Image (tube, rainbow, N blue to C red; front, top):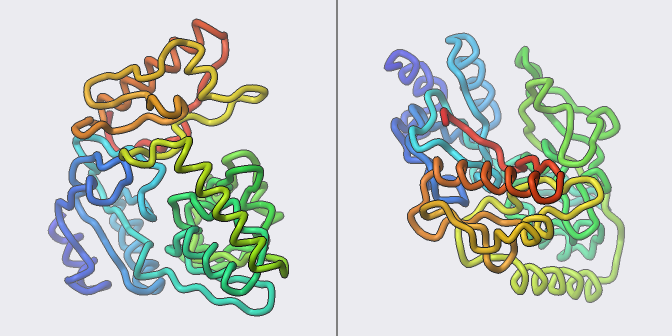
Length: 302
């Protein structure tokens, strides 16, 4: 491992490579043990070099944004976490085309679109993730999805090439794209927006913010919606109907405010969250016959 660390520091600089970094600091769940190595490159060239070294050294790696849809094991991650976030978050607007680096937060992109009176991205203004992660999972909310506005993504391919991929080649579906199975790393995205009225765009963003604040447990750490929406159903409604509002395992709890969220009440472990998710899915299956599939990604050994 020390040889790997030295190689990474040579490639990205000593200040960009941390050892035994607690993942609690880097997930919205505020849960997770240490990553063996945590890399924070300040350029895509360095990010590409880090990933190349990991592949050459046959070391597992995981590309992280701001950790908004992730549960990390209490034991942490035996490999390299490469964070593409604040250091790589530039946004540019030309006409009605917005181009963002993968680490740009969706909320910041929405504000930039508003500043230029561009509409089409209001749905994402309250999603606590980056554009890179949003492209990977075709993130959406309130009737909008990334595929409604995504023109193309720039990716680092498995063999180290940088490639621009049109959105229609990503096979975007509900919380799905071909990006993970192709082992691509998203470096940036280009969005096609539309000219709109500043006041109407702002009003829509404020309306969605109010809906989030009033209905979602934003005051507690979580990973957002815990389960994917089953076709023809709403996960939160199924969980409520199963009598699980407020149900808890240790410090992990089904939110009393919105049953679609599992929250960390303060001292939850990853094992408790995992156990709660499994128990909720089992009880919903028994009560309604519907299978709930977690939307939250799990990293490390459970």
